[in-house]
Amino acid sequence: MTSSDKILSRVDGATGHVVFNNPDRRNAVSLEMWQAVEETIDAYAADPAVRVVVFSGAGGKAFVSGADISKFESERATREAVKHYSATTARVYEKIQSLPKPTIAKIDGYCVGGGVALAVCCDLRICGEGSRFSVPAAKLGLGYGFAGVNRLVALVGPSFAKEIFFTARLFTAEEAKVMGLVNRVVPDGEVAAVAEETAAGITANAPLTVDSIKFIVGETLKDPDARDLDRCAALVEACFDSQDYIEGRRAFMEKRKPAFTGA
Image (tube, rainbow, N blue to C red; front, side):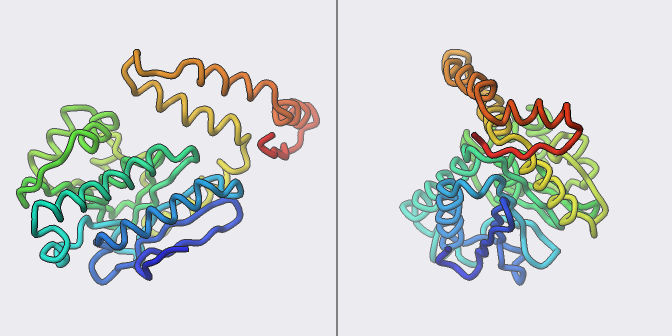
């Protein structure tokens, strides 16, 4: 599915996986890897069998540790190259955030720079107790555009966002939880199991309801004049008009698990 052996993809049941496979560099990401991620996301978006997408890093020591600095001379040495790299990453982040299916960041170990930017694009973030988080832009002289800063502020608030950027230090998993940067902190050996359990729980629920909530929550974060309230109302109406609504009621009355189809 992808054009890079450093981005792995697979589908387990209704869950699509995107694995950053560069463990020797703590899953640092090159331009080629971002392009492969984009290909995978586009494929998952078009596949109705994929209901949830999980992002993770190979090796157990890092989720994503940001940009591959060893590639800077070849990928980000000129103004034009920087613009191309930035445009590519911005496009991929936006596609992940706007994917109409729920997304989960499964975080083992370090989540740094672009890793944090990726994680905040996801709907849910689950990490191990030993995970560490940092945005070291101020130590590298890097600029961060509005979109990435805005996502972080929407998640943790302006004060914590400033602390993350101003200090550029490593934050513990517990600190990340307090800030609201992650949803759950679990023992290091249980991250995969909890992420899989969470994904399975989502895919067992009514697709129209889950997808409508993703869209509506996204609209709440927009300026009031930019919100598509008609679309929100239409998605809610579609839920009540669906066969899944009938199935959900019947399953409740019959004390059994519902078998939702998304119709």
